Length: 315
Image (tube, rainbow, N blue to C red):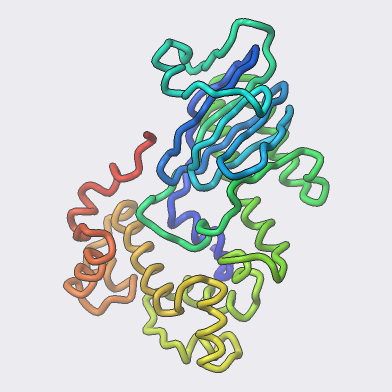
């Protein structure tokens, strides 16, 4: 990994993965309410037709063939033929037999919309600021991808695979949705403005990004605020203020949280000894590492290692 590739480092450490729920074949005056889902990032790929995405407190969003809808915070949402329809809960539809062999069929009339629905999940115990201030929804349309041809190509490949529905489709589409989401976050960071809030703004600030890159490159180093401020080319007080305003955490809080985030990944994806995990995450001893880990996650690192692979489910 390139030493300055913060976005790749963050999402690989958070273990972002995509999962498909079902293909939805919707007809008639369809109206479905999808419940909140922890912190899953829901997605809907519009294979055909059109409809509306509704979210509480937000204006309805019209979608059509070729669009991808992403809802980053797992909020309750509706998928409807028109915005004024009263929805039926997804749970009630499934209980009534609407979902069979991976196909959710609603209505018996001519199909009005076909969607491929699923979610992106990540280590839900991690409160990384890159996710905290993402918009309530992201609406990706093919016509908006002119300035990002790689995004348009990925959207086209998703549509082709989804419509083929052959062997391997679910795995391919799930991986491509991961790509689309990461590309979208990257574009939001590259196009950040003075009005952009949170971590995306920090990524576009070269001074703050240098300090973040240093933390990610050497999380085990005994960083002081003075060291990070020097990398940013700012005074200690100015750096501490600017970092906190843009990242939403103090430099030392971010360093501690990132070390623990990395520890969770190492504990569940490697066979490193507890001593090595502690050392690679900036702790002088296993006892100090264990205390910090348990204080943050309410479980010791040894117990987490034994159960951590079951923490991320697809429910």
